[in-house]
Structures are given as C-alpha cells and as structure tokens.
Length: 196
Image 1 (cartoon, rainbow, N blue to C red):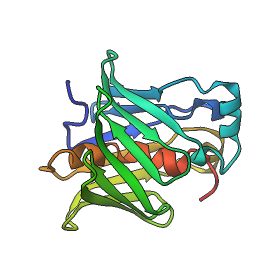
Image 2: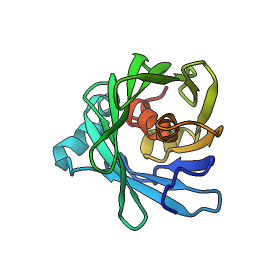
Image 3: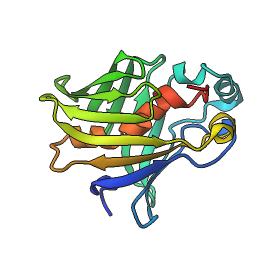
C-alpha cells in the first residue's frame, strides 16, 4: 500500500517497552498488517533518554519521528518543538504539510496547512483520551481515541494504543493532519506517563 493512511479506520500503537522506548509507533490496519512505522529521527543519546524517564519532562523536550513504509520509504516527519505549543508535519522532501498549534494544552489545538492557512481544529476531552478533528466549519472529520491499558501499563511502559476513524471525504492536507493526530497528541500529552 503506497499510502498507509488511505483507509478510513486504522490503529496507531506504541510497542510495549520501558521508558527508553519512547517515540516509536506502528500504523496498523484492521487485518493487523503493519502499514507504517515511526521512529526517532536521530538518536538522542543516554542523557535524552534519562530526561524522558522523569514525569512531566519528556512532554516538554523537542523531538521528531519519521514515518516510513514497512520497507523503509519515507512518508512524513512529525517534529515537535520544545514545549507544547507547536508541532510541524513535514513531507518526504522536508516540505511543510501543516502544523498543530496549541490553544489550550490537552483541550484545543488549531491546525494549519503548509502555507499557514487555518484548516481545522482538534478538541480533546479532559482526560485526553478522545480527540475530535473538525474542519473550519466545525464539521467533524475524524475521531481519535486512546485506549486505557491500566495503571501499571500507563506508568511503567510506553504502550499506548489509539484508534483513528476518518469520515471521508476529507480534503488534503486536513486528511493527513487528521491521520497523524494520534502521534502528535501522544508526543505532546502522554509520553511522560504521569497520571492524568
């Protein structure tokens, strides 16, 4: 499959690992086929990994993951700047596809295209387990849900699981932005593994 996000429903999962295994994701279809993987763009070294172990810190560190097809072809890069204010999505040739800008941490993010034009928003619920993606008219175009895996899994591993449902047709680049919302929200809100 050339576009792992062409399906209207898929899962995004982080493998179950200890605190050193952050920022790794798999995009999986309904038949459990891995369509794409995401891994850190560059090795942050032991000091960066140790910072990630401290609750409340990893959400603030800058980092990026590159999504590739299962055979290694680049698809997108999700680049989160330091803090929780801005995350940029880059295409395979480093072109800007769009960005997520924080209005209220954990509750509302606005979505822009590569030219800086407002194209939609992401609204999250209080425990940050459900995210609704809307277009500029307020029409719901996607729903992202984080599955609760239990307290021990939440605190001691990176195992997060998201379901993504896209209500097609959704025009580009909003469709791509909706598809990566789970990864963006995980990098911004859930990687420190604090109890929320």
